[in-house]
Length: 369
Image 1 (tube, rainbow, N blue to C red):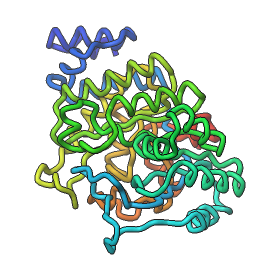
Image 2: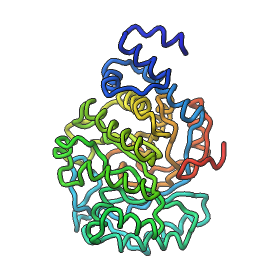
Image 3: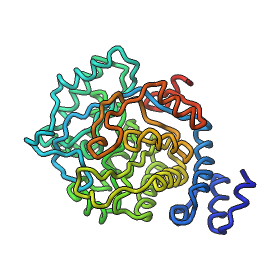
Image 4: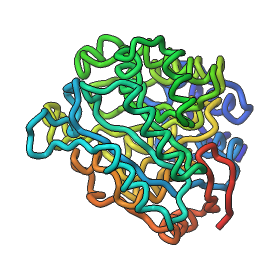
């Protein structure tokens, strides 16, 4: 490894590489330089160093499924292909009974997690969503409930007249186990005004996750990339996450989410290429040195790119999902019916040279395959 690093010709990149090899935190300026000057081979090498320090040669996955309660939403973000207004023939809204029926479809299947996220419905507060979690837990007590983005939480808690802490404690009492990372988009306030100006602020997103961590609810974090943001915006976003993680240690994983162009008002932008996807995974792994896991959400990228990302810092492939999400298929993902068997996901991991490990939602190993 040292011999390879010795052949880096650029002095500035060599200094950054030495930091990474020596387990020294890189600066925002270093992160920008990696984005702008490091070639893909070097990024893969450096991200691999950090990846192995955290997770060795293991690559994780779980058995999970999604419920998307509604695509009716009070917000109309420019990048979103999921939102539909009331009365639109493509809109939907599931009742509690219908959502419980989805849970019951998995009664005889080896699933450990349910992921619940959807539009911000105008009519419901936490006293509607909390009992849903309770009923799911009563039906299947050991199922980990990862539910509601910070954007959904902001609305349902505020509508109920609670503080953020009061609302999260109530939801935890109903059975909420962890929070997904959605709604972060990009933290820069000016950019946020341009792409999702109605949505909760970046400061509030961070406050909700910090509060959740403080009361014992872990979470994930995301970043929407590949639209009108710059590398500076990405580094700023990750710096804010890294700072909060230093404070709380409550984030399990970071998931870069690629902007997809179909069926939204930003379609004219197109999409970034695979090289940029891999560059972004690698810099994310290097920069977020206090995040234990970097996840490739394969329904977004496609299975092959998710597999390739394992060589660029990613150590988690999400889960089997079983065709229970439509968010990215509506935005043009080629995984129109996202589902993978255990055998398929393990094959992808092994083929990339890693060891597949089934995990629970908190990354405790269940089985090495």
